Length: 501
Ligand SMILES: *[C@@H]1O[C@H](CO)[C@@H](O)[C@H](O)[C@H]1NC(C)=O
Ligand SMILES: *[C@@H]1O[C@H](CO)[C@@H](O)[C@H](O)[C@H]1NC(C)=O
Image (cartoon, rainbow, N blue to C red; front, side):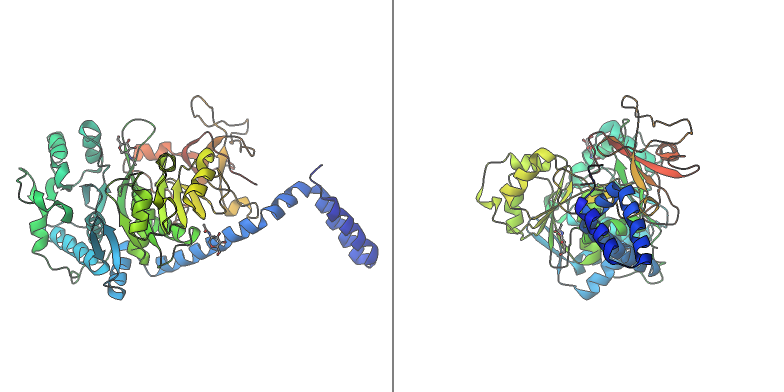
């Protein structure tokens, strides 16, 4: 019992001596309760500021999310609203191009019109195979205006993996950026449904417009013939609609296409906004792939739904990172995986501290480089988070605890924050169960699998599954903490500790 704070005990005894009999009884009970739960209470007290901060933000996110749901907002409708309100403000910056809200919005309507004319409708799928550029986002937002779902294909894939990615979503059309046409042409023969292929040249690819690509329709000339205005009488997409497919590199071989609905997209954006204190005055530096959730949701979401401009890069470059941030006057930087380690490995430069980045937002910053990273580049806030694209398990480190990816608030009872780590077999990743058939919760410091409770009808707790339904069932476990409960199994986190501090 070395967790007992004797000051508290003596204070309580003191109070008991000076107060009346009823209060004395009450105080004795309080003391007994305190001694009984000393450790628990002391954890709650020590984590109180952090947890209160977290709960306040969570409350704001949930309240805001309810408004979005009630008004049936979607990324497309929010982009339209921003374009009406701030037409000339920059939405995307890319190389030397500046794309205003008006331009992005108009391009999205041109895309919608082209595919509307060709008979694409709600529930159809179009695959997008393109490198990073502002048009990338305008294309999927435009298609979503028709209720068409865009599959954001990993653009580094070739041959079998590319063919598989296209095959699993059965696209009616495939939009391919000019330089990737040969890669798609190579696998086209092997696709069972024969999709229409569209070649697209970004504003940075003007030189490729003329070169012929046999078997591809040139999207640019079709777009040029359309006005960038709303289609009259079109049924607008809804908050609950499937928006995009994002592929997750499964532990077993080929990529799986995860369903991302507008509800989840908007929730992810809201979470990034509140936990990283992002406001309209910020500018995000996004060198991540737009086909993945970190770059495509957390990076781009605030731009198209909140009016926060975003710098898009075709590729991450460690030596250019902070130079770019200074040049574009970015205030929020994104990272993923080993990027921070690569940044730390660059030669010292005048730009190391000559930038306005105040917050770095991402996943994968390791404990052993964390402090040196923060010191060298003078970063005030690190917001390390984890959220599986397809999952309902999200966790975030809001107070910069070095090495932590997040925490479980002690103040919240478990039913309000139903997630945790469970014990699994270290060899097979098989979930371990006791004689009662239920799983074991990991103790602090023990590694395990991250699980989140599935609750239908709640954007934060639903699991929308994969396009391939068999893959979906493998990620769900029942009878985890109670009979008949249902949990989503996130990735394995062997080195993962939920810090209680
Ligand atoms: C994209 O594909 C490459 C090559 O297979 C892979 O290394 C990478 O992890 C994939 N990216 C994502 C975000 O899945
Ligand atoms: C966000 O703002 C709050 C209140 O001003 C502050 O306590 C918190 O540290 C900030 N978070 C980050 C990541 O900068």
